Length: 141
Image (cartoon, rainbow, N blue to C red; front, side, top):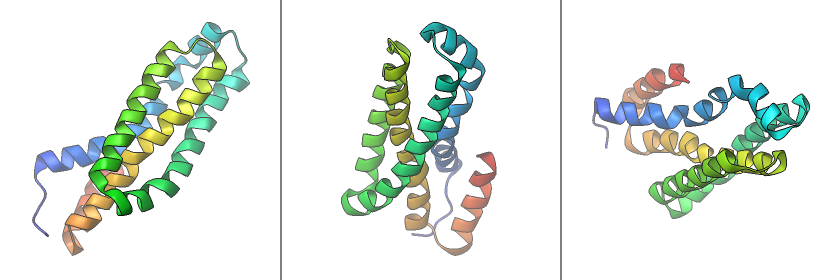
């Protein structure tokens, strides 16, 4: 299949590609508020970002082969469910330790979107079409 993607498909790819970045960038301004709420140090609050990035890095090693084996849709849906549950857990975390674990799990879930949208482009589009899609989406992230 090498047809041109619809605008809606491009929007979908863009949303998937930005999920991990939104999950980090949107909470950065709240670092001080989170620190006060948990009564913890700036170092531990900074660790929440490091733990998230670690989860994103490790998730990429798993999701590619896993989606090759069991399918893109199942992996994406599972990852989005994991992301959603972890996001809820972040919002109700009673302490910094729970928040750190939830951020790691949140990253593992978000990473599915980062990996799967690119795999779908490679699967469905070829040559100049896939190059155009990547050239359109990548600058957004």
